[in-house]
Length: 496
Image 1: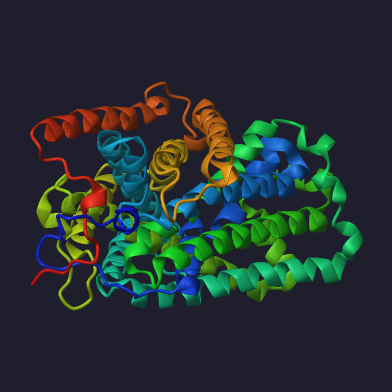
Image 2: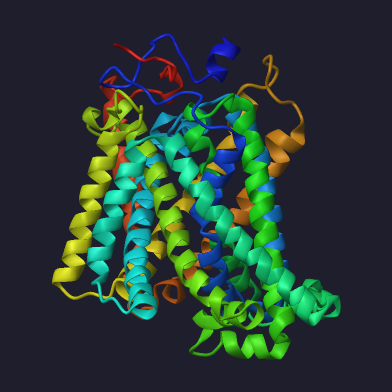
């Protein structure tokens, strides 16, 4: 019985609606690592968020912030990857929370996840359109409206998504390799030009960590890691998911941490402590890493930087599209959303119905922004990203809490962990850490949106409303005997 539960399969043998499931064994550890790191958009995060960590947070302690966030997420990954050994489901957090806290709470949190990851795609779409339009104008002298760029990119994202996770992973591997190569080249150039002594260990001192607003620095640093948690979402499509998800999660967290630590440290080394803090607090904060790349690597790299900035956001968009579609697919499969959304492509086994819905909603948003003349970045991307990350952190928090009752319930069963560090201590530490991050993000929500508006800065309440309505709906389904436990879904079923 324990072994049957550990596979996320039950006696019902319920397969995906439409007689198809996701493509099994389509992605290995390395492509999965690239998939989830791409969601974090390393180049975009270094250029866009690191100045916020430095300027609004605790100055040159930014590398220390990234290190501490990495440690927290590694602690979270202890329980997270332990769960992945027993549960394989495209609903990921939804399935984990259902297993730990009950299927009603799991459904409620799952609805928040569906909305949050879907909004994350809106952030990527408006930001991608904005930066693509700007880069075309600056480098080629071609004037293309941002919304036209977004529409074209929507077609590319949907097409790649339709072709399946394995095809998309290959594209992401190319884009992400280029991103990491440029960031690594910049770090090496700083080391060569300024010497090892420029990399001050003061950035990792407790005194510097407490400078300025350390809580805000930590919160902005945490936002750079959003997407790492997606490894389990692709578990149904992974080769040997029990091992692949675990390996990919740890590798992704460590690699992302190293990228951010070294890149922020190199920026401080190149400019000097006082200079980079002053620049990060000025109006040109967003140009710091562009100026560093041209100054340290030459003007040609400035052009390369501009185009890789676009591909960075595109890669993040495609990754978030894959995450959102699989959550929608899982909810359609469990009849928490219309069952038609669980249909997959007969040839590529991709959740194309969910992709059509996500793309249609996104195009409507882009067209509405264009018609009403709204700013795609200030009034679009900034707001969408703030709402999305709030919801994702909330779901991560509930998931971390759910690990504890799940392992307590299965204590003593064959194949289940008995180490208190795995089953209680690490999840408890992760829960406290994530709670602190969530409070910091909500308390500084206006800095994320850029709006000093009561209505705008209370938008996370909508996510709470989604969760409450989702819980009520799931409770009604449960009373009627219609609420499916994700543990009773046979993810290996592919009905004709």
